[in-house]
Image (tube, one colour):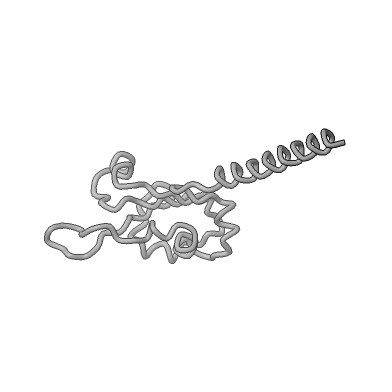
Amino acid sequence: MRLLLLVTMIFALGVSACSSSGELSEKKARSSPEVISAAEIQESGQNNAYDVIQKLRPHWLRGRGRKSIQHNELSYPLVYVNENRHGTIDALWRISVENVTQIQYLNPGDAANQLGMNHPSGAILITVFE
């Protein structure tokens, strides 16, 4: 009887461990520090790109250092929509998330490689389904 109880307890622990690790890996796969997926955008309940980023990845919106030695202003990421430069970070307020399929942050190095120089604070790439 004790053996049956022990086997049942071990089986129950094994099943609960497998089910919880499955949920964790699914959540990890959905959540990336550099990408906001269409599912995350929809789940956020926000109407524009700025509000989505503010809710899900607010550190993308922080200024990073000075623009140059001559200017004391903070530098912010530049915004691109479907790989076309769309403007400064203020442009995010005007981008409705209705057709946005992905929002991605590129660090300054990756932005320079992909988009060219002059991205001292990186870039935010918005992919829109047309």
